[in-house]
Amino acid sequence: MDYINSLISGIVVFKIGREYIYVKPASAEDRTFADFFSQEQYDDALIDGLWTQDDAEKYLIEMGYWSKEEEEKIEGLEKNMENMKLDYFNNFYNSSTKDYIKSNLKKQTANHQELMNKKYLFYDKTCEYLKKYSHTSYLLQKTAFCKDKKLACKYFSSQTLFSKYSSVKNDISIHLREIAKSEEWRSKWISIGKRIFSNRSSSFTELQISIISWSAYYDSIYKSYDKPSDEIIEDDIALDGWSISQRRKRKEEEKKKNAEKMLPENMKNAGEIFIPARNAKEASDIMSLNNQEGLRKIKSLRGDLNREGAVEESQLTSTRRELQMQAVQMSKNNRRR
Image 1 (cartoon, one colour):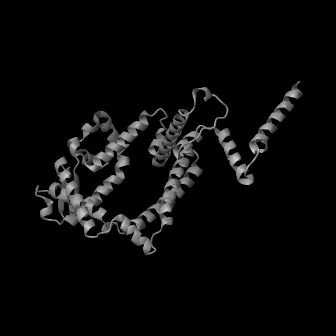
Image 2: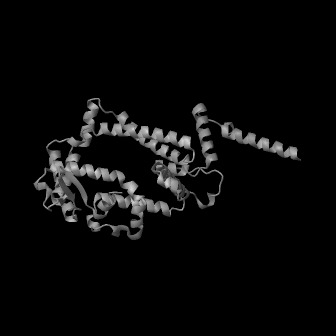
């Protein structure tokens, strides 16, 4: 909560030795030149043969320190972590299951971070890093001041200012979500919105833009028709799981709407319809029109085809099952008579 005034003012304060340094929000004009200057540095570095991040990754692969399998593992971990958050939300009121998922999610997160550290081992030797460093350093030359209001770059090197500023900024970033949902922040945000900030919108800092994004996120949750309980809102993992659930529901609904547009008007209430798909997206949209029974039938059909190849309709597992169910129902009806 100590960072709220820093966010409101847009000013970041830190110390180098005994000297206080404060960094003001950069003007749109200064950021425009920083964009140009940093891109120029990137282009020059590229011409001089400095690595890009892709080059660095290729070198790591050549040295046997990185592999395509590890890249795929990162993607797999990200999918697993998303599914675990969803499971955590679905089991929120089952303490033992929830704790088990949370413990495993922590391990998965650590594994993911370890792999990312390996992947970006040489990031600080790349054109991308130089561009980021040049952009921030240029702005610090214009916006970082000592307590006596003199420019800090006159007393400290660009590297020292960049390192200290980046560290403090990252520390604030870690707490933005916690701040955005706090009563102290939300009472101010709800009252006056973006007018809470001292500086103009054209000079909003990255931290201010981030807190706006988080605040808008919580606004949308409180206004949601399916608003989760306050307990879930307070639990970041559970709330992430809820958001994943909502996103997947919307995606499925969108698929169904897109697929329904392909149906002829006179067939919308038919039992079974075969619709040709022109691409993978259309195939996915069409598949979403099937209910659970339809999906089970498709799975059964695939199994029959994999085992037998060509199969008569009367010999399909799903057909035989339907005939058996009809026979059982007819037998029940006869006994009642």
